Amino acid sequence: MTLPATTETPRRMPPAKLRILDAATRLFAAEGIRAVGVDRLIQQSSVTKATFYKHFGSKDRLIQDYLRSASESDLAALDARIASASSPQAALLAVVEGVHEALVSDGFRGSLFVNAAAEFPDPADPARVIIAEHHEAIAGRLTQLLQQLGHPLAGEAADRIMVSYVGALSWGHVGDPIGAAVAFRRAVECVLDTRALAA
Image 1: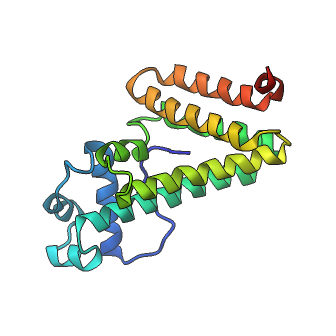
Image 2 (image 1 turned 180 degrees about the vertical axis):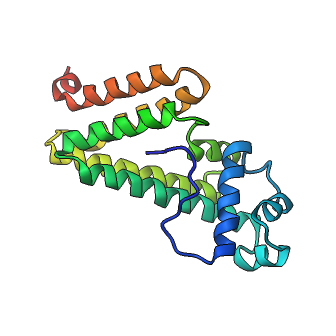
Image 3 (image 1 turned 90 degrees about the horizontal axis):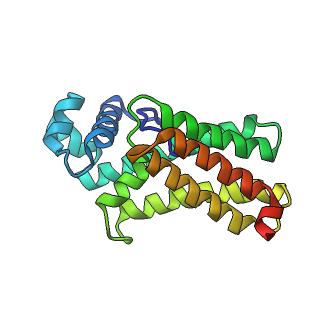
C-alpha cells in the first residue's frame, strides 16, 4: 500500500544520514520534491553541507534513497498485513483496510509515489524506475494472493486492483476520501467474485 509518508526506515544508517532522510521525507511529502532545495534540507536536518554531500553526493541521490526507503517501509507494512491475515481473501481485505486508513489519516496528501512520478515525467529517470518497481512489487503480492485463491486470471485481476488502488489514493487526495475508500473496497470485492469477471 501507499501510506502517508513516514520517517521510518527499515535500514540502519548513520544518525546524520537518517536525519537528512527524515527531513527529506517530511519536506518532499508536504511541499514536493523539486520545491525543496539542498540548503533547506541541510538546515532542517541540522547537518553541515559537507556532511550532506558525504552521505548523498547530490540531491538526485537523496531522492532515490528517499523513494527506496519509502518503498521498503511501505512494502514492509503491506507484508505485515498479509502475514497477519488468516487467509488470502482476508489479506486482500486487509489491504483494503490499509488504504482506507491512509485515506482518512490526518495530513494525507495522496500517494507519495504518484506525486513523485508527476515531478519526473521521463520513464527512464532513476526515480521513475524506483516508483515503477514499487508498484510492480505490490502487484506481484496481489497476484500471489489471487493465485492462492485459485483466481482464473490472477495477473489480470491484480492489474484491476492496482488501477483501483492508484485511483483511490488519487481521488482520495483531490476529491472524496470516503467515497474513494468505498469504491476501492467494492472493486476488490468484485475481483474476488470470479463470476463478475466472467460476466
